[in-house]
Length: 425
Image (cartoon, rainbow, N blue to C red; front, side, top):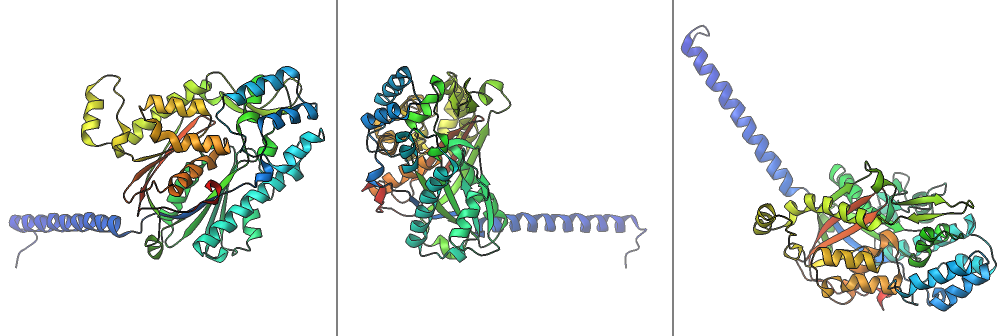
């Protein structure tokens, strides 16, 4: 028997300790690898987009007449909006909320009742449609995340959804306000973190922008732009980490990457809520907004590239100055936020994408206008409706928002998908 005071005894004890530490470390590493591999994936079961009634269509001529009838706008402002609309890429098939158009006809500015009516129509319709499609009961929804940048009533929109569908008392609710057109990806990112922390949960995401509450009734040019581009719309999706849900899921979430330039004054102030000199409230867009968006996209790609690009592209980017990686080697499908024709064209040119790569984004802008955060879901609906999604396709969901933000989500198709979407019928 070894004495603890014997030198060799000390050596043997030290070896035992080192061996024990090595075994424990190996077990920890193996445990982490096993946990990473067997933990349930974060999946997208299905989604639904609001399909506005044709009775809500407002063509360019009618929109001009409403501007005159309302008495809010000068002749110069009406002409300016007509000029913007003509080159916006938005068709006469796009829609406005009934309360907004009725108010313009009567010369009345938007009120709380009309704004609530719009949100209730969009939120309740699209959530009901998705629950019916998936066969999921409201009582089986564990978390509700609603995003709407410019309308934040109390009780919140998330609370309105819970109340309308009589969801269980343990339902967690999150209401994202002021997050801009990229809040779809922000909601996905939040859902990912919640599903990583909480086992066997389902998250309902609802993206909506309230056009009624956004209407600007003044004559400052940089605040009239949103009147031309924004239209009624919304979308919702169900994400899950339940193993039984992964079998029927459409997509698996691979990455989310968020970048924020809010520390820079030019980026922070390039767009947002404001009042003009007459006290009329609206959303202003400064001349540098496109340049800021390009900076935000570049910052986002620096983080996203190493996660998705193949090694040869990364090596080229590292060895060549001003080399723009070929992101078509990382993705088969692109969901580019429909902020406007210029936004899509800028991304297309900057990333050397083809017209085919961006066609679904152009079609979405044309048919629905800028539906803010919901726009990327309309694009995905277009691709599904036309049978363009194949098993294994890697899909890039990209959005921009005030602050200034650029956010990306990467999905992988679990199967080939051709699905009917009423909004694209």
